[in-house]
Amino acid sequence: MRAKVFVLLALWLTASAVTAHATVTGAYKATVAPGELYEVSFTPTAPGPIRAHFEVRPLELWASAQLYKPDQDQPVALTLDHSSFDLLAEADAENLNAPWRVVLVHSNSVALTVELDITFPKAFCVEIAAELSIRISYEEEAGEIEDYHCDQMWRALRSLGLNLIEGLHQIKFLPPSNEVEGRFLYAGRILEMYRMTPGRRFTGIFYHELAHFIHFVKLGASLKREWSSLHRQSGSDMINYVREPFGGPPNYAMTNEFEDFAVTFSAYILNTKDLFDLGIARRDNLGKPILLEKAKLIAHVFLHYRDGKPYTYIYRFGSGYPVIPIERAEVPLTAEGLPDFTEPIPWERF
Image (cartoon, rainbow, N blue to C red; front, top):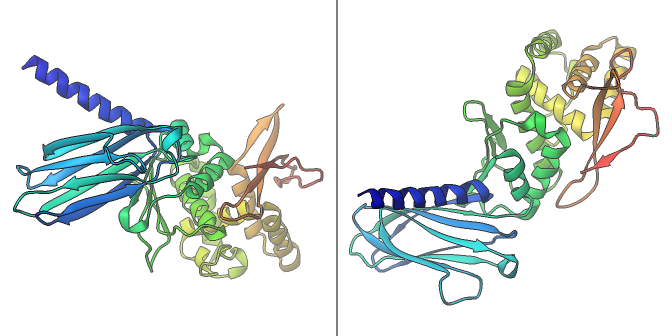
């Protein structure tokens, strides 16, 4: 009995280690009729562990499962089991960037319900998992995450500073929706993405949802109170808001104080100088300083000190496809609390 317990514990520890160090998990579900094969392909793009985890119902029915490397007829791992079981393997430099296959063979007389989670390494998502312990997953209907998704997310996360993102638990890609393109779930610290198409809007939505995380989780109580006050003062006057910068409803910031923060934050990342120029123009030409005060508060999100002097980070988007380069610069804050845009500005590219 003790030997059996030890073996089960060793298997559990092995599976946990694979999950901890692999980087992307695809979730698949299917009902498999008697005599049918169920096959799923996936493409590792970085070296690392692979785990195919099966949950099969009814519990008492057995099935055979195999895991194949690209262009190979002999499985690298196989098992005959029931209920819950794993296939484990390792991706190396010789078998990357080509589809692997998981095959389940069902020879019972009753249909099987199969839930399959495939965890495998993707370039750039490796760094996200290693540095931040963020789980990255996708549902089958959303499509497999590509390297450019991981690349774009890693650039965005690094550009904000890893300390500002620490505590985000999961990034999940879900099927496209007509109602929402992104969402942050506070209780689980989960960021959901419903848009897979690369480019500026994908990047903007990702920053928008990160802004919700920062607002809810990382922003200090004093800045939260100040933001709530600025939003209340904004009222229904669009002059006190910035337009949604990535193609959404132009007055989306007016929805509530949380969307106001996320839209303003996104505009700050898109081009900090443009946001401040707009805020200064509205203050000087229209006598309405609230947007400028909002921009100054976002600058304080990035406040840090060097040699006893206050600094912040400013941002701008570069040009590129499918991945948008992000540029960041460290600049001092003036006595008025404005970023100093005096040239030359030492831009850092992500």
